[in-house]
Length: 300
Length: 300
Image (tube, rainbow over all chains, first blue to last red; front, side, top):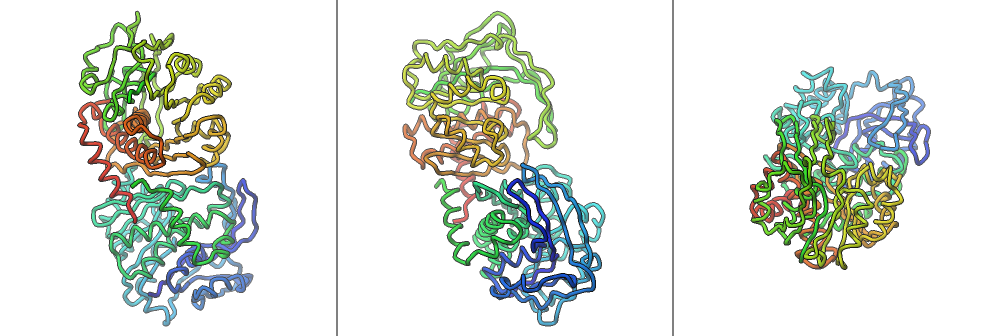
């Protein structure tokens, strides 16, 4: 089934203990679709500047990602630069240049309006709401958000939460939004605002799913070396949503496998800078890693 | 098979967001044996002061814990008091009074010297070595340690590590000892010093097993409410070692189930102050929680 993602497209400059990269292709919509496209035809809505090299998206087009919803505006592409600590859960943002992303106003092309699965990556909740108004009737819509909107646009965020089926956010965001430190309590508190599915990402510590008043917990894939965690959360969301779109159901078993696929693809993402590793992956790699992951966590 | 634990016996005064308790029975040897005794007959070596109320150990005796190795010295029992943050991974020690524990010099009673499984809880590595000299020939010996010894008694610690089969320590200790932030690298680095089995505990984020050049990762049991995490790590170790002693083998499957049992018992520990919940548990509770845990993490 068709899957639409609305989010950022960026050039990221990243420093980690493994090295550094300048102006690497990034952004939530890119990481998401690099992952989701292994499972379901994916459509992107986003904005880039005149400096953007569209041929960098070739690997996505080859995976049937529809990039016709990416518009080019006058000015420069969104740029972010940051430096990770040795503890890669911590990073310092060195510079954020929103550029054309500052006035991003997502317009959904007519050919995208029938999208059955929709992921609203981390953008202003007012814009997320505008996207929901434009898409006809998605079977499943989920959103991501961040501290900035939780703090500054809570009422707008609450309005979108009422309209989506799922939310995928990280542990500190879940705690901040709910005021609960315990993640089981945080997940329940978020679900009370609307979404029937709450996914809390804990980075290298795994993830938690809350659905139908029951929980599922999953460790992360243990990597012997992490090159760059940038985009891991978005590629997790891409694997998760892509698998749901492929399976066309929201059974407990499907949701759990979707979490596992998201975990596996996020682990690939961390093995290279930016989208390098995701771009080099083959579809079979996801199933192979899932098999390794199943052995890694099995105690039956 | 017989299991011997050598460690602390304490009165803990604890404050958490759930409340507080004064002079609650605690210490590594107590939490450990409260857990291990569900699986294997356990023997304790430790020291208490004249103020110690031995009838508080009744629940252990009823579970076939041999407390004849607990000696009473002139003076007061080890006392610790601390306050946990809302993020229970963080705590402040308010006061430590070593009292009789300061000059603890473990003497293994003759009747304990045939113990086949041995756990050296967190004490001075020189004393751990003395215990190893006294026990005839344990089939499996493991140790725990802490930042204080890693920093101040590294060569003594290295000497004990050479002589044990397993080590069970927490993530920050593993990182400090190895100088590696990545826990897979840290586990391998520790194993290079001797122990064939390395268990890294991550508190609410689960645990990692390294054995035979392969890894096993496990999330923690998701608790909807944590009353007091004091002793969770020691009760994890007790469940782990107790199950190994019961099964009398170190197969991959046994080690993994031992981790799962350790996880489940640690979760019970967190549900009450001190040893309250562990003391109130029944043997069947461990199997019941394991079944719930298996469902919680299953994505087959």
